Image 1 (cartoon, one colour):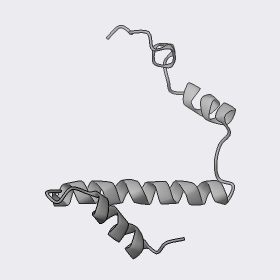
Image 2: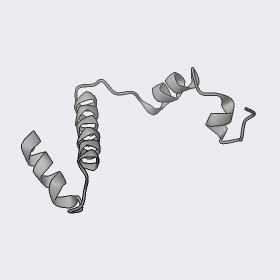
Image 3: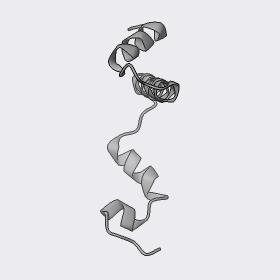
Length: 72
């Protein structure tokens, strides 16, 4: 496993030279979220596909689930 510093160095190698500070911050944010997600899964804090569907069904409308256009 790489250190955070190594992750940042690797990220910077792959970003264009004209990347803004905002671009870099965004990519660092995403990288950290991915790291946290992997840690959660490793530590048993994830959801199965069925559990995720159940949790999402509590607030998603049928139109969003099926992809059908809804009324506004």
